[in-house]
Length: 293
Length: 283
Image (cartoon, rainbow over all chains, first blue to last red; front, side, top):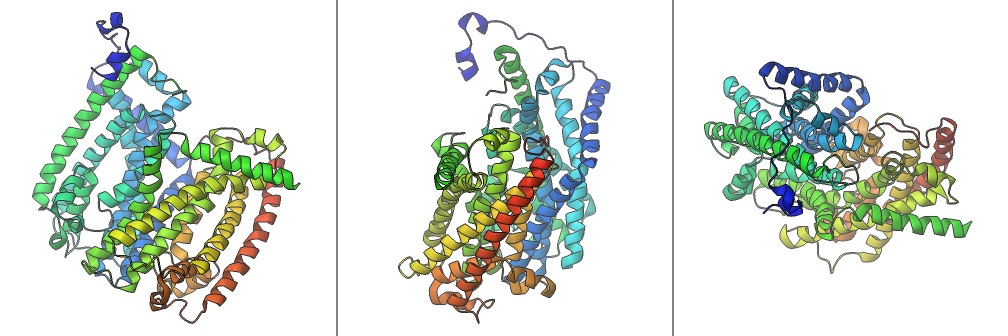
């Protein structure tokens, strides 16, 4: 018996869920995606300070890690690993702060009941959020990558563009699927949502091997870390973009692409289930949009 | 006056502790306090092992580990004071009430930093213990120069509090994205203070900036106090004695104390004039 079932009065348990009027059809879905992506794209242009700091801060950390590798007299590929890791932090930060915590903030600001009441699909709203955020985030990641490459003369040697594109696309799909899943889970949190988001930065940078090859962990730990899309995504990208990358890779790129595909399907499906569950709670308990929680 | 200072400080310290810790159960609070800093140290440890294999004898290993461990205080104490302003103004919207209460605002802000100091200390101690017992960081607790360590730590915390006060006062006057200020300064100090690599690696034109920061001397002294004679392997301040480093740290602490007092007066007046005490940036 779930927590929700236990909390419901006996007479209410057998009631069917009140149907929510979601307008179906791909055109409505796409319109919702665009409607949610639009304010995110435009809004970020209105906050140049925000864009600057979200690029500047990860770049400073990246520079720090580059100098650490220089202090260790590491091979130049490692400098490239640090620059790539710094660029990819932009995506994780976007997923955590603009996807996972977004519905929580929408609840705090009173938008969530409007989402729930509207006939739009919550999946489409979150997808719009993801696509809108991904555009600006890609730009920030590109700036970090270009600046880092230029400043530290990173020796890129791309071996397969098609695989690299596939890895990036699958990593982003799985990552933003995870973000959508977190988005619904974070609605369960109260004041701790902020702290939990913060707690999931450095530990994830560490577990996913943002700045070093994950084969350093050993097979078992690296395999466990592979549940996070960025772990294998970055490992595959390192193998495809640096001459010495394959020697430091965890699994072969083909296997990593296969696992990333599974992760993408798994996280997006799990996000859909979690969102449906959240909607169900919103209707039955009436506490989902309660700011006092 | 002293009674007001005392009351403001003690109440703020208690309030700060409640704000920091009462959002969850003790276990999650402990995990939150420790996971983040320990992970940031582990990133560096694994970067080192990825390059150097299993050995941990190179002086740079202890340099990086200790620098990163003690740097936790910078984020906690300095950036924490700045966050206190934002928490009260933007999140809990209580700053306007604090301003009309009979308290000394600078003492209140310093008091709020106490909780972050306590949480930071917890993280530093656990990080150091993990390093000593599991990651082969060459620190022998019996040979640590405890008087030098205590004096340096106290001076550094006072200096970081002053820096936090100046930063917090500046934050009062910022309307757009004030959240980034503390993070930006902490990230810059991380890069320029020799926390994780010797400042001699920085481009020549940036090195004077590093020598002007109190955190640089503070971290060097803490390394010397904890590592003893092994610290001599780090070349940055090889020609400096402990006394010279302490004198530099003391001088810079006094300078930042004066700067904090002036900055608070200036920015506080500016914030009052512009009506920013109860401003909302819609973060």
